[in-house]
Image (cartoon, rainbow, N blue to C red; front, side):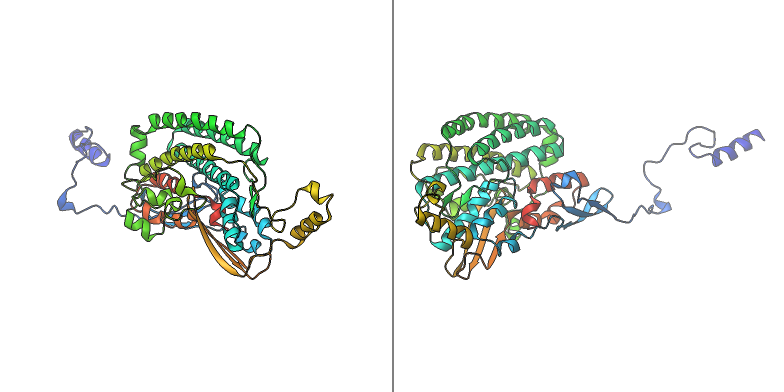
Length: 426
């Protein structure tokens, strides 16, 4: 009777056999019992638009099968500012502050890009000193943008120390920008036909000292990450884009070059005399997150090479064209000379008119090819200002790169694209 009671208790108690001992869980399901139904519904989750890992007000609607990404749908428009429409109601020089706020991590490069397009439209040839100073501004912007990318990507993956190192160097670079322009983030550096200011005395020597010291920080970061097992596991073979896919998606900049396509606007469609500078275009092999890291790190070293060459060849002379119809006369002259006062008044009130026509001017910005398209009807305001933003095209490849990866990999892939919502929601 007691044995029968024990058997009934064992059968009623999960995890016990007929003798009352813990039952063994079979490692292989009984084939005769049929396959267990483990199918589950896919889950939809929202990442953003206020999530810190989205690098801006971006919303990602993610369809998950467990932790595996089935589909990603990027939703943009949360930061829309209408820059292109605003430009239709402003003089060409009044548009330059708007360019600061598109890719706000590389404002000087944006300023240069717009000024180059407007000058081509107007047939203006800038001075040699202005040309070299604009190259310096563009390469400093490239370094600053890549420093932000490297620091934030590292912190997304868990390397907090790299974030501190990169942002320390970024502050040193911003000190140089501030000494030149009076601003750190939104510089409004250029004017159609020149620059808003020349570099102060001793500035070139300060930049040279920084260029000598800065690569040591990059070497220290490489020592920490290049062979780090965690970093390799989180970045290698993650978010792969082949060269064919990168071209098909119209990727540009480090995203394209990391996939093995050696296209750089500075080399293939030179401007500002870039064809006279000695520098290399780094190219990846696999097109994964790891290659994008390698490409951007090497681009910063190449930018230092360009900066040192620019400092060596920086000529004396004016930074603005000698044309009072284009460049404002000095305030001292405007207050004492009638003709200068008239030119000052006409430029402020009427702007600088451009000939009837259209122009597209591409530059190699930190995130890729930034194109400026302008249409003129002969007035001092463009009929159409259209931006070809690299971030907008690069993020379109995010669904393809993330498909089949884990949710945690999606954060690393999104970081590797290096987007700024200001130029996406323009």
